[in-house]
Amino acid sequence: MDLDERRWVLIGGVLLVAFIFILRLFWIQVVDDRWKAEAANISERKLTVFPSRGLIHDRHGRLLVANTPVYDLMVV
Image 1 (tube, helix red, strand yellow):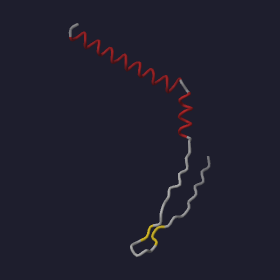
Image 2 (spheres, rainbow, N blue to C red):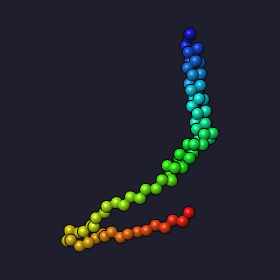
Image 3 (tube, rainbow, N blue to C red):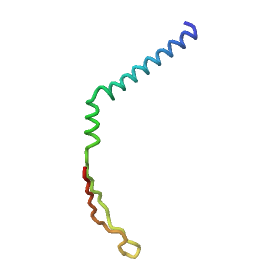
Image 4 (cartoon, rainbow, N blue to C red):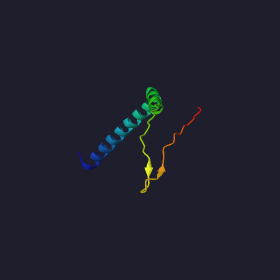
């Protein structure tokens, strides 16, 4: 094979792999809906983390920052 034939074979191979990749992405995102349900389960998982925080005092021992509880109300 000469250089021109190799170039066309390489370009054809790359285009074939790209087409297969795009076809697989289309299949996963549009046709196969089990991944949509899995993504919904992951995105709707809620985890409450209560961080441990401390009080902040200045150099004279006076309290600068204290902890106050805050509550969020969300209506869906």
